[in-house]
Image (cartoon, rainbow, N blue to C red; front, top):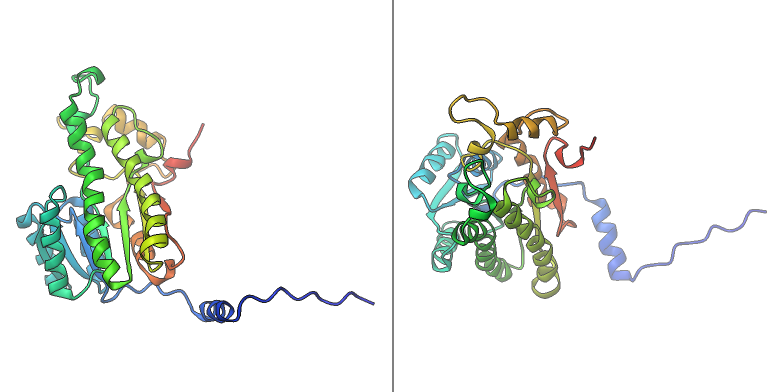
Length: 295
């Protein structure tokens, strides 16, 4: 005679019902009518993010220090049937960020997703044949840290407070491969992006434990994409060919190419959607295999 089947211990009635309801749901990747605030959205990478996200039906607030360049992204979005506004925003000035947040809320009534996209490498904080590690100035180091890390923290404070009022929201930070593997020569940028990753994990915990369990914080780590800030590192300005550094990167990338801005959008849509409702404090590499390659 076979032994009786042992039943799993029951979960508290309320929680059990909640879990059953979750099981019945199908993954929802829809971001239609969600409001995205994107800093640095006039740049190559974040500008394309804004266009692609708007094409999926989201409302996009283009936040950038260069409002004129932001208008060009907005015009692209609107000409393709999307919905977008531009708000001038200096991510290193809290009053400017507050004003930008107020503009977004005035236009759309809420902020569902903040993408902290402002950042980039600073030329004079990067070791080159002409600039030794020993000659990099404290100003160059501080400028890089401020642009990439401090700006992310300040924007998360301001928009996070709005999300606290709503009792919902999603913050997405842009880290980098250099947050995982410090890049040779990119001393300040690597340190700054490592700080962004650490902050992502810290803020995810803080929000869930102290503010709202409906506010999630995650990050993506783009691999090597060509943008305005890193072009000089990867492409020789005189010949148009790969620099030795660029050639080395491609050799260490199993997929053998640079990524495109469009290839960042899938992970962003996933993390911003209800399909990722139980994901916080996580990092998704988008790198063509760079982070897992070894010889």
